[in-house]
Amino acid sequence: METKEMKTGISLAGTILLVVMTAPTQFAENHLPDLRGDRGRRGVFVHGQISSETPFAGTFMVELVTNGHSVAASTYMGPDGSFEFASVMPGGYELRMTGVGGTVIYSQAVLIAGPEPNLSINVPVRPSAAPNSGGTISIRQLQHKIPPEARKEFNEGVKASKKGDHQSALDHFQRSVSIDPELADGYNNLGSAHAALAQLEQAAKQFQKAIDLVPDHSLALANLSVTLCKMEQYPDAEQVARRALKLDSGLLKIRYILAVSLIAQHRNNAEVLENLERAASEVPKARLVAAELLVETGRRDDAAKQLEEYLGATPEQDAGRQKVETWLAE
Image (cartoon, rainbow, N blue to C red; front, top):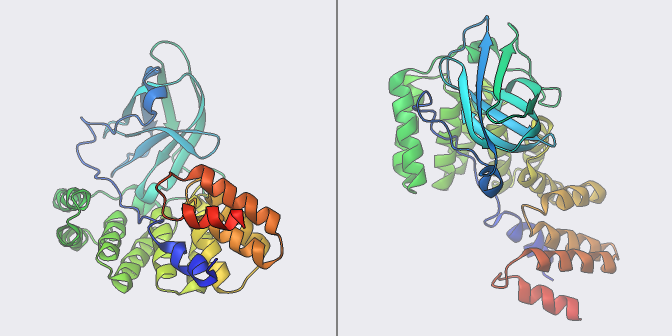
């Protein structure tokens, strides 16, 4: 196997996507669709109401989370605090209210039961993040109201991004943050547009602006870590990746970025292998990198197991299969 290609060329080729925030528009009438797929269609309709003595301004989402990190359903919260899930399987969940950048504002355990359950959630005057979220959102951001014109430009940018028109998206996101300099998600999306146009330095600057406004902006931190890794600024990429994972340990692609950054610095193989193993379910090529490291340390049987796992997780037409099959046959 080709060591340099395995550790650097494969590491970032088509495996990490920069995250663009979705359009926070018309959330009063049009909720984000339920995300449970086939399983969700056998579930129940859920209506809920979030109340607080402190009025909310801005865009918020409500999520139902299982196993501490898997989002089972997600929807926008209406201006009146109402929310709905079209189809949810009965059972226990963690309900999370999230704000800018996916920052958790409030969470509590809920039980979905009955034919049409109705959830009533009261958020304390000083809402705090969930225990594992890594921080709290500032009152300034919590009460930040997006001007209509900034929201319009932001939404147009999202539409352009979905069409692959990254230059148009960049222009719209630039106008959105010019109108609203505190729109952290606008800077995150502006950075993603720059990255899509291979303007990595500009992308990194925009992601950092989002983080300066919202230090716990997990998406901007994730995007910045990817960008720094692509720029071969591995020590910085490592530190930012660690910050993102502290906020959300389920960012498996960022575990891959952390592993690649550590490899480039000739760091602890045990930590590298642990992160590659955890990343592999979303980044199958992580197993190729792990196999490379295991061969270098004389653990050829373990390396073979990694390659077999890779073959089991990739389609027949995958370009790397023939090389892996040849290596295993030797």
